[in-house]
Image (cartoon, rainbow, N blue to C red; front, side, top):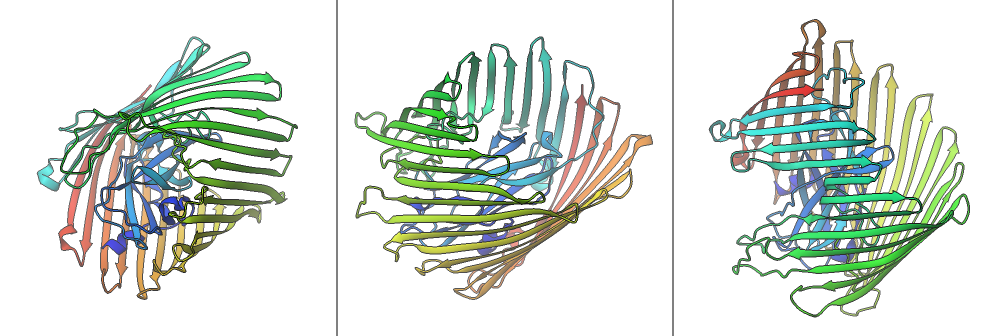
Length: 636
């Protein structure tokens, strides 16, 4: 079963992330499944990594977490962060480790494409993060036309769910709100997704308010602020941020919780709440020169959990980062950015001892009429620590470059290159690692409307000595998108190979084929369907794992009766012929919803669902569950 889980991810995004080898992790693939996903359903961010380090990851010493973003124009907007997931197994050196991070997709994002990225944290340090990967959210229902010429509008829904396990004692309520408005010269945006259960009456999975006023912008709730790349970036936060711009001076101040607490158990030491507060001021010194000063303080709340002496006692930590950044537009096409940060880190807040470190980064950007390019070099000291910028890894020098250029008016080419080296102080007790990732991508529009994308990526990790770490992964993919009238068809193929010259890990060959389509059969009928098949071959024992998923969706509207029906289903099967971990299972889900448009402003939805599981080698997981749902939605 474990090996099947490692390969249950559909690897549409194999090796699309950045794996940090400082902790000994090599990313094999990450994918969201099922894709597309129905709004309000649970999606799994499935990820496979290999422990390429020299030490094991004991259970309780590592956990996974993922962040979800939406696209607002060309900017990514933070949506939510999943709860930390701590797998129960210990991952030995050279072993493959797979995980499925669950995320309940808020219904307010139906019909949109969301992004996610997953993180692996070992011993409190983030050693791996994936790139942003996308998944499509399908609308569950037909919505009436939004009200026009109003100052405040939006929709609010109340949902009740229950399922058959435990004698239909799984009552759950959901309150969802999406409201926009304008008050005099100010405007606001409010989103909330609250889950209600018997034991936890209110769980705010997502809540935020943005208030745009002439005197500034106030953000409350789930925010994702960015100060500078080395001080605070890519860190989700539940808190408050205020930003103001006046003449040549702009500034932002923020404070909030960046890590939720986790009580200790018999096998884990738990985790403190961690809070961060920051400030940044930017001054437009000249028309082509901006200077920035910033400071960020992050610290644990040592009283957020009850320490358990049966496990390892953890110590509260803190980090303080301060520095400056300058942005010089040397030419209308050329921009130069330089950043310098210093940090003070305490491994124990109650002890006087602290460590100081430095980090700096230089970046050059070129933006022409057609050609664009960027190159950056950063050096993060061994003792530099910034809790608010988790992607900044201490003891690392990184060179990053990318070029985008049109080959013709119908074809674009992009090339990216990233390489880093660690152990900057040449500590003989540490392994020096050099990891390089190169990717080439071409997107072309042929025959008028056909989109063809071809990509190649190679990732190598080499240690000194090479006997400790020496592996390479190559990935080749091809995808085609073809619109035909009101219909759309897509197909993709992908092949990847992982080779470990040290022999710690089994070499892997993975292949994937995906076909999908969306159809507008008539003004009343629409449908979509997809199939994904993947296989992974382990060269060490010649075993093979295979996974197949089929999904479909059908919607039928009866406008005269103000009724619509929607049915969707998914069948996932998997098998493995491994002699030590054989697997053969399947999961079938079917859902039917009836939507009644009670009026132009309100509607009622009634739904039934079924989930059936079979498992040849673990019959305890077999069974059939039924679910029911009712929802009231009001738009104004």
